[in-house]
Image (cartoon, rainbow, N blue to C red; front, side):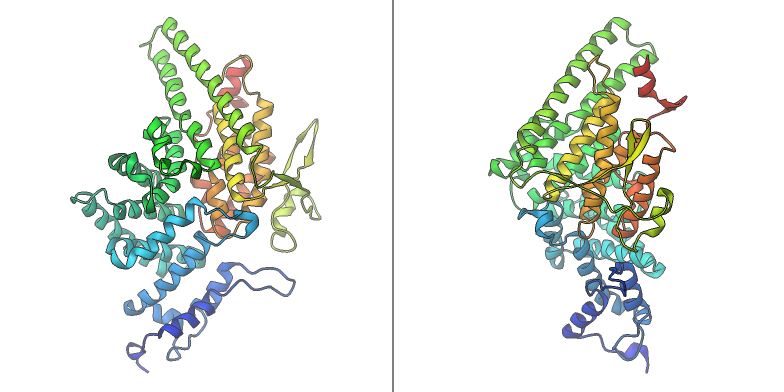
Amino acid sequence: MDLGNVAAPSERGREELFNTIFKPRAKGPKGIRRSDQELVHKSYFWRRSNYGGKSSSSLLRQPKYMNIYQDAFIEKFLYNFAPELPGRMMSGQPHNFSVWLLSVVQTRASSPILDITCRCIATSYVAKATSESRLLLESQKMYAKALAMLQTALYSEDGGSVETLGTVLSLTLYEFINYTNPTSWLDHIRGAERLFEFRGSHETTSGIAHDMFLFFRPHGIISALCRSTPNFLSRPEWKTVPWSLDSSSKSLLDHLLDHVADIPTLYSEFEDIEEGLRVRRMSPTVANSRHAALLRSVADMEYRLRNWKELRADSYMNGQPVEVPPCVPDGLPHQWWAKLGEDFQLPPFTCRKGPGRVVASNIYYPDIHLAQALNLYYAALIQLARIDMRPDRISALEVYDLACRISRSAAYFLSAPGCSGALASMFALRVAHYSFQEQSTEREWLERLFERMANNASLDISRHARPDRPPEEVEGGTMLDKRRAD
């Protein structure tokens, strides 16, 4: 039979194809769940399809069948990136990540740029999950086309439309998956910054624009932290107007971000003082005066963060975190990672206690909202400690404990369906990673965790959501450690 004459699958056939390719993960002979990669790879690319006796891999070579498969890819992408999380993860509240993405996919039929963008990120996701180079090449072509269409849209009269904004945020997801260069995801986030600022806070009060803003806001603040430069998100109107139609809808995380959004301003002032002294454009008297004012602002920020935890997190209506004893496998700690997939999900985290080390319990949360908010709170205090030179500053011991709390929460985030846990935790995990000394047991454990999460979530966690920068290493410690010792 000529492959060119094979009929495309019917709607019923497409549904059967989807169920065959992306059926729920099965149990292995020992009750172990198979990975998505194994199922997709074996049942899709190397299994012969029911359409004309030809393999699915052969059909993929034909452009006229690519769109059919891309529809299935989009369904798979949504299944992992915007899953219907179980009750223990969600507690009945929608997650900021999933709402806007579902809306974008639902409206792509009427928007060529959203359609190509959705197909681009979905194809790249499946390509990475299956290590299929042909799909990766196809996604790269679509990415280039989407960028060209975006450039045209930005210079049009409707350049600030919700459609353009959705395209920019969606292309950020492509960079989360593929990491084309170290600053590409930040470039997209900064592009979204300009669009939101251009549109104004009054345009984010309802509808899909509001949902997009809720997704963008934490990433926009992380971008500001990376650059040590405040952005528009620290302005008062951007902390109130988007919720003006329903102030009660402001979530636990939203209230925390009101405070975290001001930390880049403190970093900018700290670096300006340091640079002024270095190049001698600022007198010591002026520098001391500004530094004293900065320390007062740091003290106020610490109070605001701790007050948020006491008033909001500690009285969270859905419950409080609980400590769960980990499953400790046989063998030595350095052998534990080799046992993944046999009878436990994640090797236990070990931390210092006195002269030795102990196996720490895992921290589990009533839902992912509290988990994301508390871990961002821990990360914010660590970030604040890096510029805190007060006599009663945040201690090095507390910084270590906060970083350990973030690490001990990883098992919970890893248990979240799809990519929701990875997206919610990656910034806090990177902050914790840089808080531990190089070649320490804690940092090595996190490096192995990043590899694990990258394989499970198809995101390159170790390369994204970095804090301001790795602390500069000096003679057995960080620059911050040296200042404190002095």
